[in-house]
Image 1 (cartoon, rainbow, N blue to C red):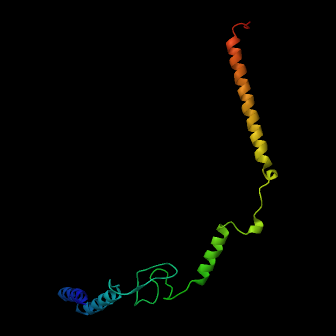
Image 2: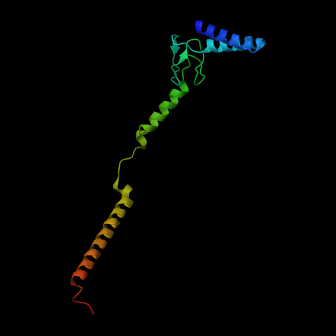
Image 3: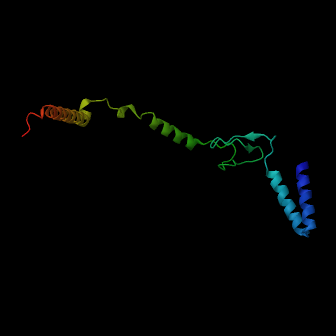
Length: 140
């Protein structure tokens, strides 16, 4: 293309000015190779089915992200996804148990103890307030 020719000509002129004539041809070939490998905007693209990379151009046979060949069908990946989704859906119905009150006896006892402690502290507070109100009469 025109842009590649301009870049390669500019590289050749600069190398000849610096006295690097032999290296100019190597550098030019390397630059031309890099420009050919660079994806073009109007080139057809394909999407990798594993990593969903969409910038793979038609001239590349492997995905630029994961390296899988074009047309690779990730069967094991899909199987693993199905297993994970199955585990996250709540599992098998045979392992699901119904709720029973006997399973939460610790919670019930703890809540009753908490209610008893709150009642005891409330009673002590009221007794203390009663003593403060009538405390002037009973002083020794």
